[in-house]
Image (cartoon, rainbow, N blue to C red; front, side, top):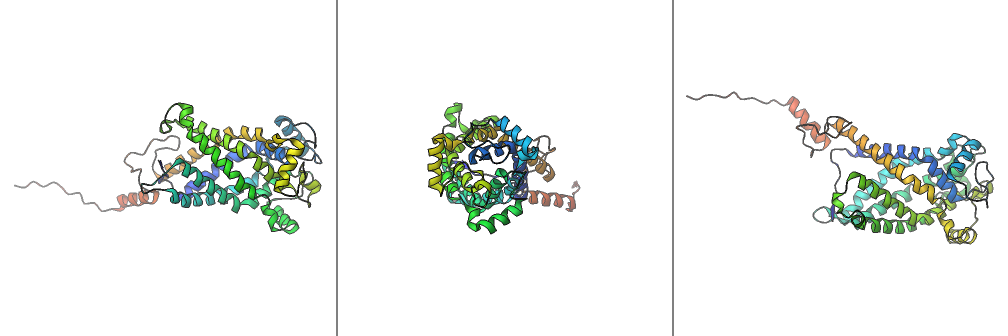
Length: 352
């Protein structure tokens, strides 16, 4: 069992702001690897310059980046990053709200939840947020796979409008069932790795250092994403394929549905074709989480400094005399009370 605690020294808006800023920074700095992952998953039909031709041998990451940059410009390496960053706000808020509600269902009388329950609650919260904001993910995929020299969409709003009017509302949820299916191996992989971390480090989990916790997070993400990656590959192909786009969106296999997509990939590329793009996805994990955690901690220290809990945003030294258990509004009220309070200092009297 483990207690579910949050830092009460930050307000809800500050926590969300720190998560949003750190997420946007980590997404932006690792965007080229995300572009490489999506292009490898979709396959690219080669009709557009800078994309490997259908049936050609796999293109290395560096070569793909160079070809894409030369053909479509340097900004092609950041295709879809704007909508990905915008996706963070509603997705993060929904996931946080759903997790706070779901974790209460698994919490005992002492305010504790088991590690498996915490993982399940996190997976369910992520699933809820993903389903609600799924149309944004569809737009991101379409913006990544399009050729910037001959774009089908001029921007995020134009992509929403065009997909809705040309393909219908359901096109914005094409492949959403794979999100639910992919959550099963993702949760199982996360749980199996987490339950064996003490054996890996040969010490109890409550004694892990920050560096060990960072390595654990990367390991859990790597295993979980590898197990669920085939579902993500099929989802990307379903998002990208459209009869309204040139060459059906550049997808390397044509299919009539989810099951047929699995079948066509295995038939034409083998079973390992379901893991196309896994390498850039795994290479993204360490820098992504490293940037996100470090930037989140810095943003958190800035907020704690502004709230009056620490002496500087550049260190974690606590402000002397400040009760760290108080909420920000409580601390401000207490400071206001100290400033404006009328304390009568009684002079000592000597009684004869």
